[in-house]
Image 1 (cartoon, one colour):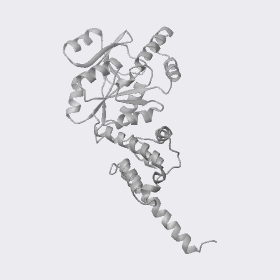
Image 2: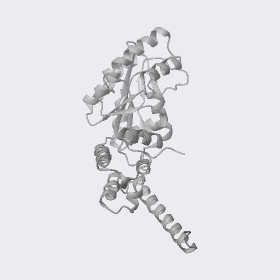
Image 3: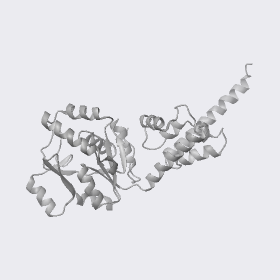
Image 4: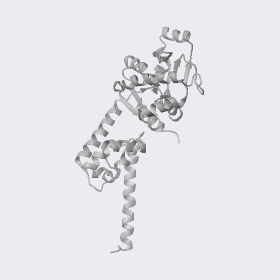
Length: 301
């Protein structure tokens, strides 16, 4: 039977109210007034018609700051939850899996450091991710490293690196101006000037260090409160493609760097967090999410 017009109007009004209630829940999570875990637990303990219960899992995860749709799809695939599932409609096993994932994420968030170290194998895209953060998250200070290698095309002294000669690098070591330093690929030296980092942390700012594996280990020894992030390629084949594709090294140097990358990849379990660089913007958001500064804004539109 076709319901009378008054019933259709009432149903439409109820549907609008339900959408608004779900939107309010998502906004509360996005603005950090509620945690995603709180929403899930409310759904599992409340009425099946409550907005928390009728919210799709995909919508709940997407509302979490720093997590985009592509990453949500990967997370749901890893958790074994279908895209159509609503939070209140999950079975006992899926509730436990999602609850454990959300609880682990919140526990990690409570222990976030204002100092995050980004490392990973050659050609994985560390520089690209850090550049995206510099351009889109202006409240995060990206530490500028010193290096003895020559600038690559487009690199600016004082912005991408401090390009110094060996004598100046030796002086910085002698005067204890470097938080860490190392020789990379058996050729050039890299180091992180410490005074700007200490000043930024003292002022309450978030600081990101993009350095190599050796440097990350030194930072951990000097500043154990730092969060170490290992940037991974989607696949080994993609790493090879990126290294060869950038065309900044000859064939012999490419082969040497690939051998080094194998050694670097084997060290990934030493790090606190692993981020796969499928997409630069999403990888950058994951890294920034680890920084505890409340003023770390979302990317500019």
